[in-house]
Length: 145
Ligand SMILES: [Zn+2]
Image (cartoon, rainbow, N blue to C red; front, side):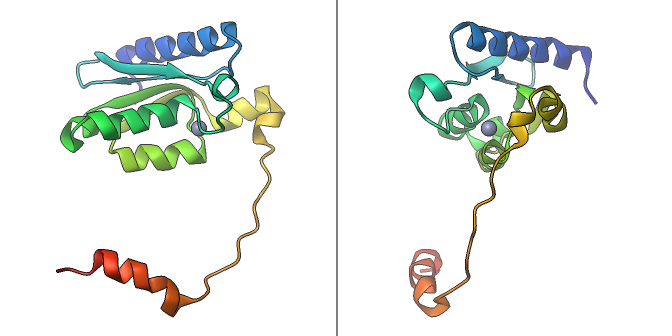
């Protein structure tokens, strides 16, 4: 359920997206808030500026949370973001331990507004292979001592 307090923080994320556009960057903004709604960190997309395909605000905030917050604190945070996180960012958010995501536009709505946003190619993947060789570093790392 999205509350009025959530909507206020979503509006701030949308404002970050607008400011990103004004600075020549892609139209995406996000922030991370604590349980009391205090903003802990915020960012916008800098893929063009940084020439970095991973410079999505959600990914940058997930990395910040994993680095700067203990797991219990991270679990109490909410990410507010102008668009639903992409697959890359969703994976990072899950690994960061952030407790909740609230987004404005869904991926489907974004694609309706900009069909190019949905035109990602698929990548061929072949495997599994070489199980006995590939398990070596896994067994070494995870073997209980
Ligand atoms: Zn993303």
